[in-house]
Amino acid sequence: MKKMFLFGGIVVVLLIAIFAVTKAEQKQENKTNYYTNKISLEDIRKNIAEKKDQIIYFYQTDCVHCQKVSPIIVPMAKDMNIDMKVIDLENQPEAVWDEFKITATPTIIHFKEGKEVSRIVGEQPKDKFKEWFTANNK
Image 1 (cartoon, rainbow, N blue to C red):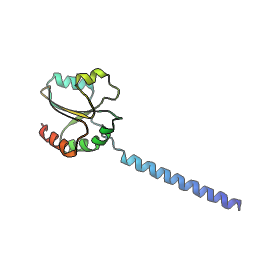
Image 2 (cartoon, helix red, strand yellow):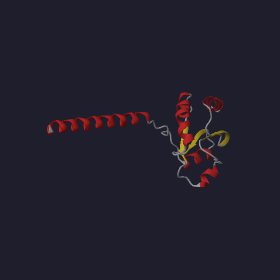
Image 3 (cartoon, rainbow, N blue to C red):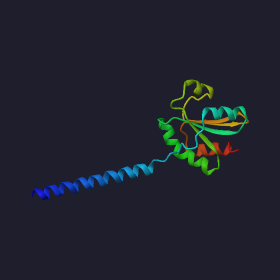
Image 4 (cartoon, rainbow, N blue to C red):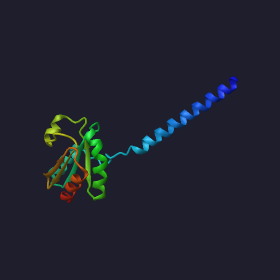
């Protein structure tokens, strides 16, 4: 009888372990990193000084709106062949927010010839982002 309880306990522990591993793998698959095309502040400033065109996505890792928007806009920009660079403002000083006049995240700014020509701020419907990208596609 003791052997039966021991065997049953081992089976239950194994089933729980299999379930936990499967759940962890599913979570890992659903977690896509949308922030791989990063740019530094120095490079943004350098590109502005050199009057280069650039589209920059300012976000914060913990921003719930950024978490909702990123899975929409990052693939959209890629599909439209837009080289949108991303920068995390999470640990940046307030001076950076002031420098680029960021009032909220997410914010996407289009710089042309070193000057800001357009921006879109906040959580917007998908069609608004598509419209903005179309209007700001080099």
